[in-house]
Structures are given as structure tokens and as C-alpha cells.
Length: 69
Image (cartoon, rainbow, N blue to C red; front, top):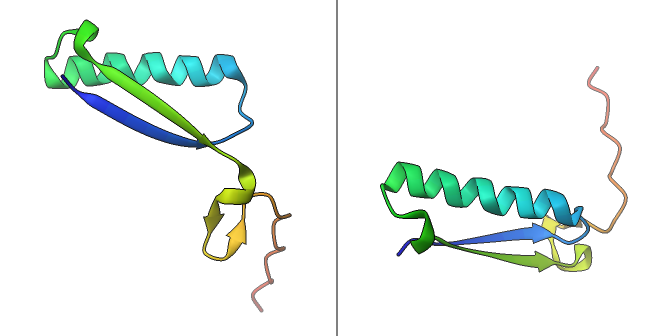
């Protein structure tokens, strides 16, 4: 039984998240030759204040790029 866990920053439209879950399940079923009914997809939603790239939180405004000269 394949089990897939996805973590997303909270705030995406529910229909987009559901579409993603279905697409992931279908892809896993097809590529691993597993019955679709055996595939489990779990989504954890992380608040933007709990997700960072480097030391920049997703909840913070983006830092403007410094132009190269």
C-alpha cells in the first residue's frame, strides 16, 4: 500500500488541493502498478508563519532582488 505525504503552506483553494490529491494518487497507482484503492495520500497544511525558505518566513513580504551591475 503506497502512502504519500504532502505538506503545503495553508491558504490554497480547497478545489486545487483536492485536484492535487487525486492527481498524485493516480500517478502513484500508474507508476507503481498499485491498485488505486490501495493508494493513500495525506496532506498536511502548514501555516505561513511555520514555513521558511532559509530564514524568510512565507508569511513575510518577499525581499526585493538586488539588481546586478
